[in-house]
Image 1 (cartoon, rainbow, N blue to C red):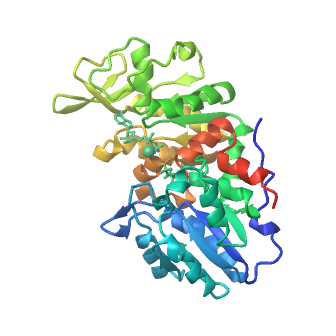
Image 2 (cartoon, protein in one colour; image 1 turned 30 degrees about the vertical axis):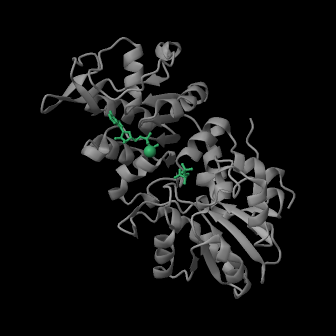
Image 3 (cartoon, rainbow, N blue to C red; image 1 turned 90 degrees about the vertical axis):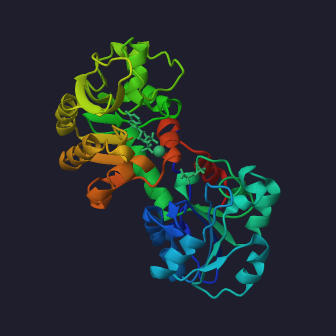
Length: 379
Ligand code: ADP
Ligand code: 3PG
Ligand code: MG
């Protein structure tokens, strides 16, 4: 097992009064018409911000937006409307003069890190420049810690480095999947077969049941020689034959399919050319219910259907089953959370990850570049 949590956290820092903390957060949240539409990641970052400011640190927040030219200005506005007074600095060249005038307990949010080419190159010179802006570095950006970028990895070579509270929480909770209580059920849905295949490989070894749904199931059906019509499928062949006879593997036995203009429910062997598989059927949900109500540990990522277009009831039913099962439940995935948003998910599961790709990579590899960087740094 590669899992290693030998990194220091902010709770190991004795003295924070007046200390300039470079706090890397993942504030890469959905923004529409200049407004934050889902503040989940921001809300989860607040405990670390408060921990630092209450102890008199000067907090300099570093974050990214995926979109080229994307701005964090709406995030600054959200923070300011929600009791977290932050000064937004829209260009790195102006950072130092703002930092020099900060008061203890003050907060600055710097613009999208990725406007600097050195960030995504994990550039030593950019990391040094960043490090020179603060006294210590804190990584509370678990959601981007699968990226070897300057503000995640290279920076830890030049400044004492620690994990934040959310980062430590993510590592600790997701790592329960490496030594789970049993029976352990792994439910994997969604799309992007190539990014999710490593999880199937890993948990077919350690879980008691592995249910593969969503568009991912179509790759299994295709390789089993079933008709999948015009359904979404990854074009590659993933040599899935090795799993067909394994009793752990569960696939949706029935499906919601669009045939012409109608939605029908049929068994997985009854798909016709031209049909489009869009969701799991009631028998599939009954199969899931049996194993989930018997489980002591459930790990779930990925919706069962094309929820953005209304095919979401089975995913909501699955979420309800998991939350009512009494099993320890670990859930994550941007689309998974979006699909079940109306449930008010926060207290329904044992743990909800803020991460997308980072959660998948951590579960598959038991570590991330950002974790290794903290473990290796000498703070
Ligand atoms: P997450 O972000 O939770 O990890 P993914 O990004 O892997 O999930 O997958 C979510 C996407 O999968 C959504 O766009 C959803 O519509 C799609 N999807 C799930 N099942 C199907 C299906 N049967 N046909 C088409 N798209 C599907
Ligand atoms: C995410 O949304 O998964 C993280 O913020 C990482 O974003 P990225 O895929 O643009 O690196
Ligand atoms: Mg997604």
